[in-house]
Amino acid sequence: MSIILKTPDEIEKMRVACRLASEVLDYITPFVKPGVTTGELDKLCHDYMVDVQGCIPAPLNYAPSGYKPYPKSICTSVNHQICHGVPGERQLKNGDIVNLDITTIKNGYHGDTSRMFLVGDVSIQARRLCDITFECLWRGIAQVRPGAHLGDIGHAVQQHAEAAGFSVVREFCGHGIGARFHEDPQVVHYGDPGTGVALRPNMIFTIEPMINAGKAAIRTLADGWTVVTKDHSLSAQWEHTVLVTDSGYEILTVSSGMRQPPEWIK
Ligand code: MF3
Ligand code: CO
Ligand code: CO
Image 1: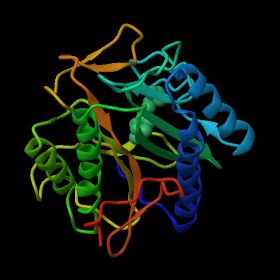
Image 2: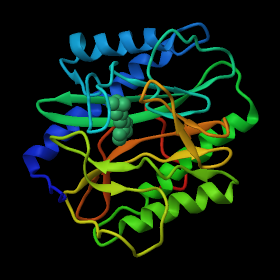
Image 3: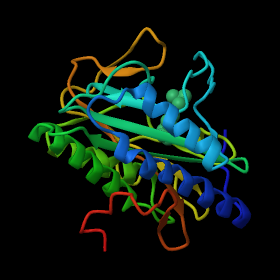
């Protein structure tokens, strides 16, 4: 249990894996329409990763202790599903919101990113949840620099989510990432400034707030993976993989189709 600082060679490999993960989301964007099934989105992304990018989809058969192997290549979390939604027969319909979470492995290194997609015309409330959650991600990212603490990130996310009347999921968090999918440290999305691990250059971790429109409590479905809000309220999530640089941060999960940072980021 320790944080692995990445070498320049590892950082370059992480840039590649992370860019590819973001490019999968660019690729799938035009397919996210009413009528498509989450299983079809999974198949399209799987084939793109394997056949076009020469990547391994990290979720497929991923089996952390206490879990059965994950059966698909991406996660598709619709509406009140928080994370780890397992793709299947479900058809997306007008008004749904869906998180697509992509993790690639390229040359032994992982890239992890997710975005929210709005299917057709969504309610003002659903749109606001997705936008606030995106801002939470970026408020967290804006804290990242050497000497800052993980608690600064968590606090920034929590403060923004709760000020909007939303709640932060506690059971799942961001994570170190590199040659392994989930490394130390755990990057929780709540907390107090100045607490927790101090950030150092060449750390790489994800920030991936899960924000619920209602209460924070979760439930896991019988498939062993899909996590939903206990109160069935909507949930949203955005994720980037981030490098701590000498002066601040570098977003590694970048691509031409990514949503641009909020205006207030320089
Ligand atoms: N990509 C998720 C994360 O951000 C983890 C998914 S694990 C899986 O950490 F097995 F469900 F794919
Ligand atoms: Co992640
Ligand atoms: Co992810």
